Structure formats: C-alpha cells, structure tokens
Length: 286
Image 1: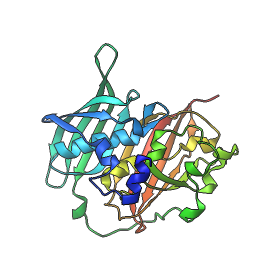
Image 2: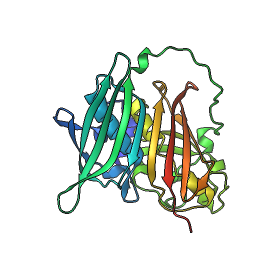
Image 3: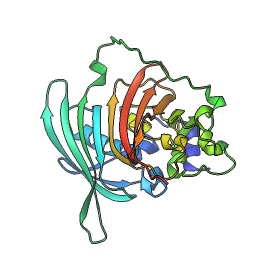
C-alpha cells in the first residue's frame, strides 16, 4: 500500500504526519537550520513554493518568540531542487504581540557555492489571543459537495503537469474550473477546490502556507499550459483553522506582460476565512 494511503487509514495528526516530517528543520546553531527538501512535494522537477514557505515558516516559528505566522512575504529567486538546504533566520524586532523576522533558504551549485533560493520577511504572533469580533463582507466560495468534485485520481490518465505533490494532497476540484483538463478552458481565470492532506492531518497555520499554492494554476483556465513560477507570494493567516477539509478559491483578473496575479482565499469547515494570499507569477506565452 502506498505510504500516503497507508497513513490515511490511521489518520495522521498535527505534529505526526508526512507534512510535519518533510518540513522539519534541524537547528545547527541559533538561527541556522538544516533540512533535506523532499522530492515528494515537487511540481514536475521543482519544489512547490507553498511547501518551501512552510519550511521557512517552521524555522521562523522556532527562531522567533511567537510561533504563529500572521503575515509572510516571500520572493522566489531561483528554483529549488530536492536535496540538502540550509535556512538562515534573523530576528528583526520583537514586541509583546508581534515579532518580525526574515529568513533565506540556500542550496549549493555544482561547485559547492551557496545559491539563495527564496527570501522571506514575516511577522508572527499568537492566533489564540485574537478577539472573536468579525465584520466581513466575504463569503465562502460556492463549491459543489466533495463527491461531485474531481481529483487527479478521477481522470483516465495523469493530469498534464501533475507531479509527486498530487499524491500527498486530498484535492477535489470544482467541475466549473476544470475546463482546461478537457481541452476547453473557460477563460475566467478561476480555480476552486476542496483541500486537505492525503494522510488525513488537519490543517494548522503552517499548512495554510501550503494550501494557498497547491491548486493548479489559474493560467490553465486562461488557456495557457506549462510551468507558472511564482515571483512573489504574500500570505495572511487570519485564524487557526477548525478540523476538517478546507475550501480554496483562487482568481486572476489581470494577465499582462507575461505576468499574472493570483488572489487566494482559504475557508475552514466552520465557514471562517482562515487565510488569504496574493502572488505574482510568470507565464510563458505562445
């Protein structure tokens, strides 16, 4: 039985799951962490940006006096590859309710020189201390029930561009955003799905950093194909998610000059907006 399926049978828990093991960092010295980036979170040959954000997010949660990410902004400098990496963190400021830090992930080239892959600036706090007052006009996305949505396993063949990360996710896409898979993209630049981890682990603030960057690119529904590399990604974590599957909605309103934005909302089983993000990504035209 595949590892993900076997884990699902026993339902992994927060702190004891494949996601936790694959994002775990080993402290070498204060502020310096080692990790072996897992090939299990790759898209084609590159490591997924949301997984990388969770890796740096875990290192910052250890280095800073607060443990919950509130806002994380990342610039992706070069594509990361599975294998050894080092994360270096720096505390910028600490306060009573928020602490701010920065982190960079480095790998090595063929000559043994360090190459910076991603640089992050983030503010951390304690989500459990936030007030319950909510005033919002936002509404959960209208996604059909999960049994009426489709994942990679429902297709007759692997979806074009799918990869190792698909085996680690529970992803059920809204049929209204699946025209690209049938050769009939809608042109609307929308992607919606039920989201979870394949081994049954519930979501937490760290896995929300993965959730905002785990769906197929909205560029597919705009009629484009191929890799859509992230240039910059900012995530806001609004509250600790309730147990159960998440609903993720991503939209693109403007593609110009070979770049597009993706605005994501993540909703939990209690109908709360638990995370938001915006990223700038590059597309290959023609």
